[in-house]
Image (cartoon, rainbow, N blue to C red; front, top):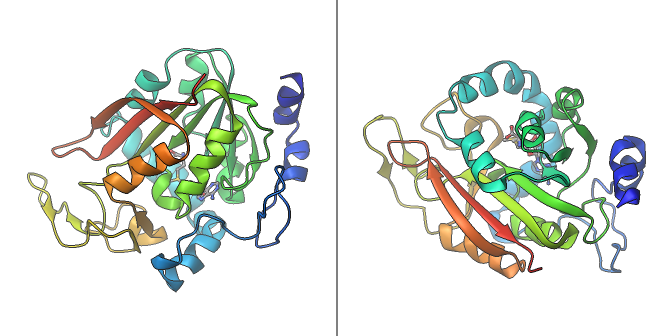
Amino acid sequence: MAFLKRSFVNVAFLKRRCRLGPAAGRGRRGREVGGRSGYPASLGAEAREVATMTPAAYDRIADWYETEFVPRNSADDPLGVDRSLRDLLGTGDGICLEIGCGTGVHAASVRVLGWTPVGVDVSAGMLRYARGRLACARADAERLPVPDGAVDAVIAMMVHTDMPGYPAVLREVARVLRPGGVFVHVGVHPCFCGGFADRTDPEAVVIRPGYLERHWTRESWTDRGLRDKIGATHFPLAELLNAVLDAGLVPERFAESGGPAPMVLSMRARVPG
Ligand SMILES: C[S@@+](CC[C@H](N)C(=O)[O-])C[C@H]1O[C@@H](n2cnc3c(N)ncnc32)[C@H](O)[C@@H]1O
């Protein structure tokens, strides 16, 4: 554990272990780690291109994310993102790794709960803001620069739609968590949000064809969100939950929040102890 603590407070140490970009190599367990291992070819060439340049994509909008997007969506927590995190993570005193920590907006809540927050993200632009909020490093969640079983908790906050290889990310989560370690996922609700879900009318959500297929899209009913700027991967509910099970994580608790139809689906899962 001392090794881990040292590694997280020393960002340079972490950075040396980051394997970003397409370079192939051997993973810590001797497996191939070249490219994005969990990336499904079925999502198409455009999604592949955007996924590969995700860091650049978020670099471009990091200032907007920090000054407009987060303030608009965090005042009074209208989507229940912070509430879900606090309820599901609960109190603890170990290391809590946020994958895709972005600008680090969740670090304060994690700290209030007693955990030590650390984060990784692929976007240098987002990490520029995160640095003042938690110890963090640039790394790909599909290839975490963290030893097996080294962290007590992992959180994934509003990121799964930015990670076409989320099933591979979940396998990494299971790998780095200690036995009994807790994983909290708080994400866009797969059933009521996406290119197929028209939320123009605040009183009703119109679900158009498309829900059942995993796909990537920039289609959006609003120009105030992320999907029209960055694009998003849609995982149907069953596929998302099966990916959690396939990674060896055991779901314990679920929550839905935001309205009128839920906009956020959250869950707590654990690595068997
Ligand atoms: C919508 S933002 C969420 C940021 C933060 N969790 C929050 O709730 O404000 C998604 C973040 O995921 C990051 N991201 C996308 N793919 C990633 C990957 N493979 N590994 C690490 N971070 C990734 C992006 O750079 C971006 O900062």
